Image (cartoon, rainbow, N blue to C red; front, side, top):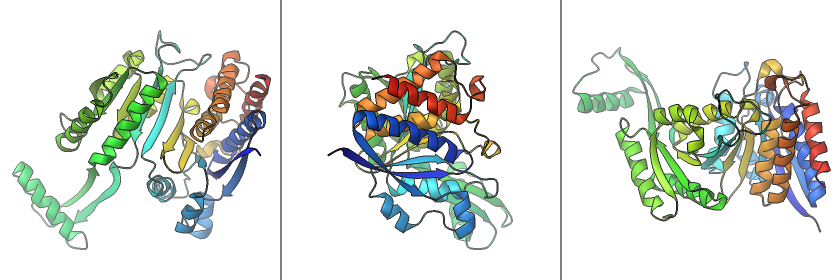
Length: 379
């Protein structure tokens, strides 16, 4: 009897349906060669579904998704829906519900792809960012307050804290303020750090870099440093270092070869992984995974829905196909994952089939077809 996996598919918005179709095509091809089956379970959630029904993603759907082995996600965002509604109500809802506490981002320059960094090649850009995915400033604690109203009590608390810290007063009831609170917990930090060290050990890496801004945001990120130091003691064979977030942005441009595994709080990881995408050739080549090692994980390209390109068939599906390769590795099909990534590299190295973002004129489906041919040609 063949091995089988239930994969939930949420195509999402904009170019999402097109790029997910190419990912499915490639994963189907490799599953046939490697002797396992993929059962695709479709879910409609995205802008169209929300506009038609008012539903983002409900408890019943989340319960169904728990029965799947993984989630394959396209992209989300639509100009008809206020920014943040879909992202928080669908994408972040799934990350938090399934406790996908690791956001995993390989930053690897593949052969045949140009980087904007002068003098750098594939041997220089090959590291992984492990981003904490459920805490920090993304927990959604905050708001705006002005004068009287339901936010009055929160306003008074913020005023008092402001006075205690700085000896200054927010004088008038008419004063308006906004506040966002970041929260990090000991176990939330420790578990993502352990994941980073275990990944380094598994991949034969010798160094883990911790990112923070403890020189200014002393409470939360000083706490982060303290926990990192504690966790690191359990991995004496792996070197460690600290980088401030502004410093790592500088050094990723100047000396990306310095980095092997990078572990970072949520917000800083969100920022530096986009920088990583650019130095590896662009968002069209940047996959991501939202991981719960003991639960349901979700795999997606890190680019957006690009609504102006919807239906034109010109978008690069490689990030989505690569995310599919990460999906396969996570469910235990490591050889199939390696075959997919090898096929991507072969297509890029040959340089004959490229979408517009890589200087070519190929259609989205032509890239998918080329990767399938390479997967099948590996036998």
